[in-house]
Length: 70
Image 1 (tube, helix red, strand yellow):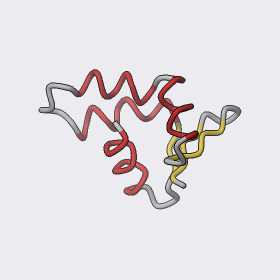
Image 2: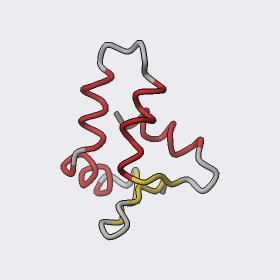
Image 3: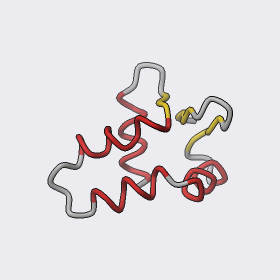
């Protein structure tokens, strides 16, 4: 999940994405991955995002629901 999220953020010019856009980005990037749905659900979850912030992988703005690369 970390790799997929960092790939998405790395491809964005500003290094950020709205949380609601994560699902479609993962679906497009992992069309043939049998774990696609599990990855999509994990990356979208509050628990995963909180953990990723604590590990220093991303920043997440609750108010704007924006995920940013750190």
